[in-house]
Length: 335
Image 1 (cartoon, rainbow, N blue to C red):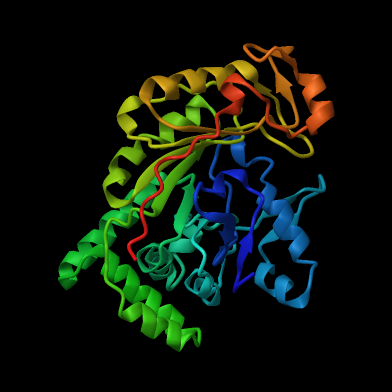
Image 2 (image 1 turned 30 degrees about the horizontal axis):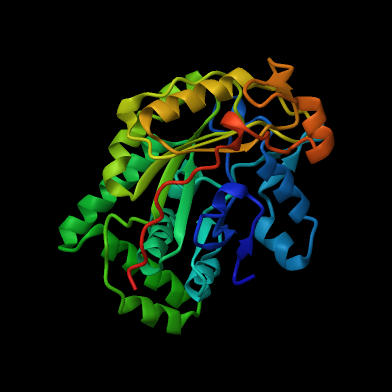
């Protein structure tokens, strides 16, 4: 573990040809974005537990959640920014996939409205310019992400530089102020590249209603990043994809944990058929705690309950749609 960069079991971060996936959380804290996908947020529970952990961990997570009467924690809306964690990927020599951040949303207003919030998110994007790791960023606020990247472009043009260089400048500044002067000096000598092919920005959605509100913004986002993608997890309803949104990857998974809601087998089959027709890679992450709508997996001939007994409730189903764990092309390292 290096400066907040931690190995993770999130299966879609384990990109082919790269080292084991990691998570990086230089921002902690969030607020529900609307839609039922946030109702059982795993990050709220994890963050609340860490508030009662070691003094250092407790300090990083202080004030981010409050325990409700039903016993579940809920985000307070407070955000903690941790600039020292930007150093982690710069020290990581093995090339890896990085989910960043896993416990916040960079385009949540509570982040952007902080004194240096916009500059800090630019510094986070600068990590993709400064390193060859692949950064996977998810948001439930893609409209705000588009505004962010468009303003970044305008500000860079005003200064006579490209967007990547402006992100590097912000990264250098935060590293320097965090006492990472050697790393800041190293980054200052790096060439810019924009859009960064290793910056993958996607939107989370759970049903058609949320998809229709969020996914269209990925079309405008596409020219600013290396890849736009869609995470349908937890999948709580049927989703019909719009082929004009320019999505380059779809991740699908059922909900897990206490109170998990069911995912119908037919919903996954429908997404699988759509992605195959569009030529878009699909990654089926997990069945989830509860599956509904079928007693067995068509095409696989395997009983769901029997598979659960063998693999555990969260196991992926073998055969057909359930064996699709596909990735987009991994960008070549520049060095």
